[in-house]
Image (cartoon, rainbow, N blue to C red):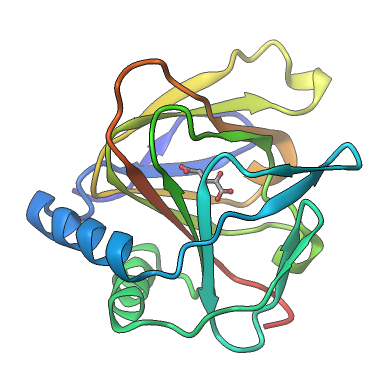
Length: 199
Ligand SMILES: O=C(O)CCC(=O)C(=O)O
């Protein structure tokens, strides 16, 4: 199935829920869970160091350095599995990516707070391609500017093997998050492919 546009004002968000076949997604989830050097890193929140409620890893071209929430990341090299997925994502999106942030949500208590992927190194109109593996989690989007507050937040359930593309003005006008859930939830692994401009 091709990428299909989600109707949101001042945004360009597309979703393909079936980007990877279920068996491909399952074996990729197992391989990445077991072979990536996962890190549990602190971030700075309102000047205080707190542990991120998830595990992370950063891979990419050697020059694709990236920092967010007070931490600077030096990329680990592309592994064969990540390189293959990068090529598939690039073919599906007709875009180029030089790095990928991996997030491992171990249980429903792991989460991602409200934010925009708007770090200066991503340029004025960041393009982010997000592949999800494992448990379906709810991805929330809400307008960041009061002038668009008549638009309610929306929720997208991101199933295993899905590809979500955010580009154009999306990061300028919208925030996104993956909230905690009390439902018993298996691990979920998310990969956001990015183009770091200084990379
Ligand atoms: O896990 C997700 O779907 C979102 C990840 C995310 O927001 C990010 O990496 O910036």
